[in-house]
Every structure is written in structure tokens, then in C-alpha cells.
Length: 252
Image (cartoon, rainbow, N blue to C red):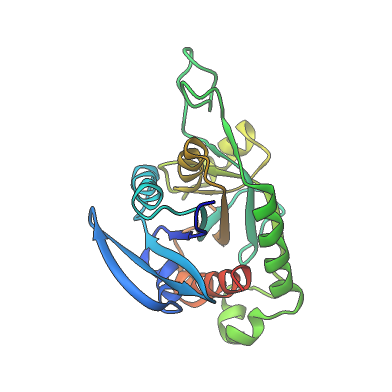
């Protein structure tokens, strides 16, 4: 049986640096312009890395985690734009399945289907999903975030009772910043909860290598005309803390 080694990814440094700082016996390994930090978190071997933004960067990074560092499972954490009307800023979305909303090889293949794989939706591992769901709900139900994030910062983003949503995440090489983009996606794929730029590509690579994965996203904006307002401040003050606390609670 192979050794359990958990890969932990985020797209940008601010989403993952807090987790890097938690590691013991930390060692930096540089491969392909990435810094992969190996170490232990709560006595569990992990490898932490930020991939940079977009599907290609994320795919290359997770492939390196699988082939070079022999990870046995993957956790991806970061921010996303809310699409579904039930999803609010400060909520957490756990990807039960993921789809590349910008994949369209019609008429050769059906819309959204990955050519040669015959799949459009990539499902997360059910056992990992259950562990992550429990860990996140513990944090939310105990209002733990109010102990680690100031009320001033929570009020700034109107976060009072954040909720967990489990369902479909859409990924694509496109930052949603207009109402028109959002409305078009809602018409085409109304079940999508949120959008980001890496998750479904990571899920595809994990599927091909048979690596179980979970994608966890904190909603930073409403994926509309106001999506760039205070984006960097949200990552620094809110989502970075979410990532730290959630991963600590998953790996305990």
C-alpha cells in the first residue's frame, strides 16, 4: 500500500502561504518555476504549492505533485465568484462535481465534454467529501471564524452566518466581471454554484491518474460588475484564514 501524502494547492500565494507556515520539518523544492513545500501538518505528510492562475498552470502543478511527490490525494483551496442566487460572499462551496464551462468542441463532441475522455463532469471522492463537509460544518456551526477573523473585517464584507454549499463548480480561463457573463452561464448551466479558473482542470488530471481530490472555494464576489472591488483585501483578511482553519480541521 502506498504512503499517504496529501497535496495541498492554491492558485496564488495569498491563498496558500498561511498553510505553508503551519508545516513542521519544512523543505522547499523548486521545480518548473514552482516552489513545492514538503513537511508535516498534524503529523501527516503533505506537499503545499501555489499553481498560479488558470487551467494550464494548475494542470502542470498537480501533475508534478502526482509524478514527482507521489501524492495519494489532493486538496485545492481558494476563492471563487458566486453564480447561484443562494450563494453569498463569505459562503463556502465544496465541489461535488466540476465542469470546464469554456470547453466546447462542437460539433465533434458535445458541449463541455472533454474530447477522448467522454466526460464533462468530474466527481470528487465521496469519502473525502464527507470528511471535508464535517470539518467545514464544525467551523461554521461553532462560529469559529468569528474567533479568528475580526468583526470589523467580517462586517466589511457583510459576512455574518456563512453557509456551506455542496454541488457543481464551473472552471474556465475567464474571470467573471460583468453581469452579462454571469447571466449567460446561468442560462447554459443553471446548476453551477460558483466559478473559478483551476478546479475542473485539476479534477481532470486527478481523474486520469486516479487520485482522489476535493476542491474547496470561498466566495469572494458575486461574479458581476462589482467582482473586482476589494478582491485582494478579501483574500488577505478572509479567505486566507478560511483556508488555514479548514485544512487544519480536515487534517487533524
